[in-house]
Length: 114
Length: 111
Image 1 (cartoon, rainbow over the protein chains, first blue to last red):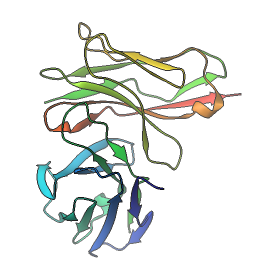
Image 2: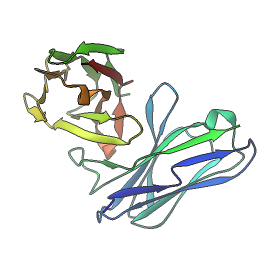
Image 3: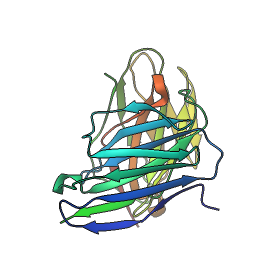
């Protein structure tokens, strides 16, 4: 069973479009995250949700809107896509927010904006 | 804010060579330290971790020791294999369990 899954794996779209990436975890964790990995492999936190509530929102354009319908899901909706949004987006989850709590990552969604 | 610096790659080694990937950090308080590995086309996997000073994390022949005096967490392996070829990320968590990553180091192991 896949612990953290993301759909789609690849997403190719035009500038200006709106798209969503879905994430689901079956680990029973209460905290979920979105990370962005750019073309140089640099990884940066975007958002963190605990029990469906936003707890971390780094400097991310408000075109990005996370939605957590329940503890097992954290979706990422992106409006008015721009070329610079092209990246690999990783979802992750953990049990609790303590600094010792391991985060488990999904396989990533490669977004290409043309 | 917190930051992690790791050596730039790529690091190219022959099979059975000794590996060191340097990692240093800047953080307030007492962060936990991690090494993640990303194999080609895959997501990140936790390789090892250490949660307090002088702890040694180890897994699959890889080791790293949390050195608070030098703010370092260098990754080592005594004998690398072709299957170890991947990108390695050093990271830390502090308040809020937000992972701060280094820039990643690509390791290429040749037969």
